[in-house]
Length: 267
Image 1: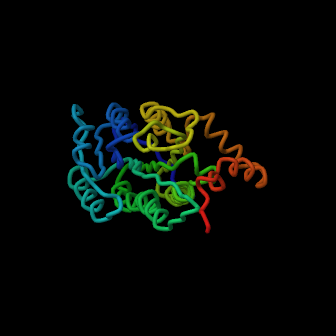
Image 2: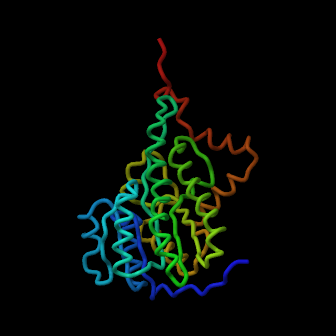
Image 3: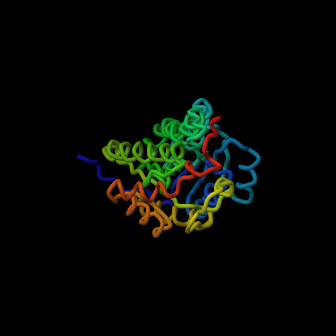
């Protein structure tokens, strides 16, 4: 049997946001601080955190590196000493690199998984004891709409986000027995410093501010899957459910692997 629980109103919550120095995370600081009791923000860059937190009385900073569990453990100890618990973890930190199959690099895939997947797992490990002390603990993990549809060049990023989605849904099945909720956030293309580096079309791209609003709205309802913009995510879900030969026709048409500039030259 699952334990029924009453979610604590966001206005009374202590929230730990990891990945808050730029993009969606920085926009989330503004949205969350208006709606919660206390917001602790973390990222590697302390200067950027200070900048994002400026002017908000209920926002404090704790720098961490999500690929270094010891920094997360130290942060969790600070949170324990100050608050005794947290009510919500928002694991938003991530990176993106794209694969060139003509110059395949396993180290690239390892790097992306180390941040996007194991980084999130490290965050959950540090936060879980604090969340269990809450009236109704809540984990919000940021995946991606690309997890719905394997696409060319996304072998690293997409697989790391698919792993995030699988991990979070599996955690949900266990944590529901402890009175805790889990949400998976699957954004489409969002205008951030990360996506500004992309060299391919990004249909239906939205602002980081709009993404943050979508997220907070979904968090207030504790929706399991928070995905946006809806037209884009439903399109990827639709293609993802097509027969494999049709999926391949669509995704292969996006590939650059066979273009003259991307083929290996052989003498």
